[in-house]
Amino acid sequence: MASGDEWCTIESDPGVFTELLEQLGCPRVELQELWSLDEDSLAQLTSSTNRVYGLIFLFQWIGETQKEHATTQTPLNEDDIPSNLFFAHQVTTNACATQAILSVVLNADLEEQELGSTLGTFQSFTASFPPNLKGVAISSSDEIRTAHNAFGRTDAFLHEGKIHKPTGDEEAFHFVAYVPQSNVLYELDGLQKGPIVVDTVGAEEQEAGATAWLGIARKAIQDRMQQLGGEGSIKFNLMAVIEDKRVLLESQLADTAESDPQHDLLLSQIRMERDKRELWKAENQRRRHNYVPLCVQLLEELARDGSLRGLIEAAKTKLVENRRR
Image (tube, rainbow, N blue to C red):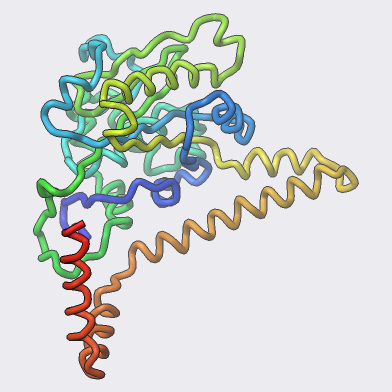
């Protein structure tokens, strides 16, 4: 866990990010992992919720050469950034996941009560800030940092005040957001000097509905994946930031008569969504739990009954055999 003004690394998981937003007072937004970008997957996504606010793309960061392949388009200059578009530079290494989420939520068409007082106040306070000061404001926000760090790994062997940095053997990842704003799709990457205009949503796409931008985003993300080496050499993850699915289901249930066969189906789907939230809550509690004392106690018990040394030797033998293969 981080302390003071540090930001820790958190797991890229829809349950983590959804509860993080809840802690920031934004309870009617959730994240959903997308396993495919084909038309059927996007159609299923848009049929399960009223609103898709944006996409968050996670990819493996492979060092300074990454910047050469980050994008083929030129970021907007500061003076050209639309006043209604929230864009912040990334000034804190481990905050990129939360910053990507905020890049979507703070550009979404959320009502004041949906956004919550914490993020609503932050949005108003930083409205006139340039990108670098917006990034500093995120890094300096006690509320945002506390919510972020609540999902950090508990590690009793990290000293107070010591920041863990990835070694050469550890993988580093980066997050970027894709958000629609005023019929334009933007890529928001805090490591770039400004937002990147991916494409405009034409009249034909607009007639197709409010989520027509997803087709444009799909092509942009697929192109990015190819630039980064393809799925075989780079690790990717994609999540959609959407309205809480229970909102649409409960609205449909209210308009459905109890005698309608659809009524029971809607009830079942609502229960599934509630069960999913309970599962996320339990998983997040396990993430926060410190298992080190349990492991130490188990090792002590194994040592007492004389089986620890034998297990260690067996593990060493297995390790040697695996290295020979």
